[in-house]
Image (tube, rainbow, N blue to C red):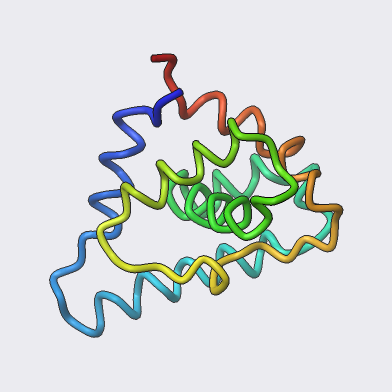
Length: 124
């Protein structure tokens, strides 16, 4: 399983900053807003709305950070996807900063994000 080339490019462009403090802060602010919106139990039913509101890249990064923080309990396919997403980032991210706190059982993320993960991967 590999990350879709187009999403990898989008992530790379999104996180490629010009090195300025303002650019880095803008990206982090957008990711925190996405994390805050997704940090509720309703994320199970409103996941697609978050993708429309914030875009694929911030949602993918927040989802990947959440998966990596819950690695011990999740399946390898979602963890591989999350590693690929974070590897495509061109800036350092602390996964704990952008982890979605949905208040749900850790395994539930594989339920509500599964279709998004499948749509953004290609088979080897």
